[in-house]
Amino acid sequence: MKKKQLIAFASAMALAVTSLAGCGKSDESTQKEAVSEAKGTAKEDLPLSKYPETVTVHLGGSLNPNAKLPAGMAYDDNTYLDLLKKDLNIKVVYDWVASSTDFEEKMNLCIGSNNIPELMNVNATQYRALLKYDMIQPLDKYFDDYASDALKSYVKSGGEELLRSYECNRRKPVWTGSAVQ
Image 1 (cartoon, helix red, strand yellow):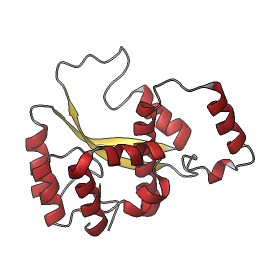
Image 2: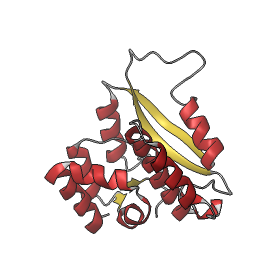
Image 3: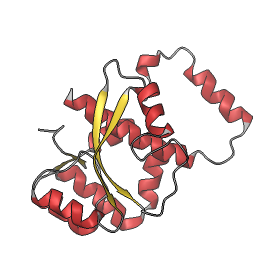
Image 4: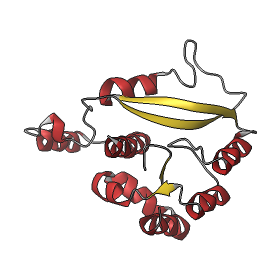
């Protein structure tokens, strides 16, 4: 089950990045080619297939106190999370949400108490602390096997610092929290 959560997280992140990258125009022939390649592929064989059992991913979040959410939506109840649940059977649970001004302090406290969510944003200092205390696990196998070409291109385009960070994760324990033991 823990492996499923790891794959679910990697898939969700790839979905988020590729959905942002896919906002450009695409010609009709490319779309037809993609459809023809997908014909005959069992839905279960696709990397972003719906999981038979619900996979729960715990997050720590930051919220801009001035953010205006659409009526009827909340940080932990919105269309994106609904689609993850409906289409992939991934349930997102926010362990905590801090204002953007308090997020760094909240994250530091979580690292210090060894009680971190499975997914959250961290700064470089926090990242190094997570590495030092062996609180993260590499995603390289999952990245290599499941990341889209767009996501791989994004990592490559991030320059030397991002590539070094990725390579460091290949050697050291970016998946965090209780899902990985």
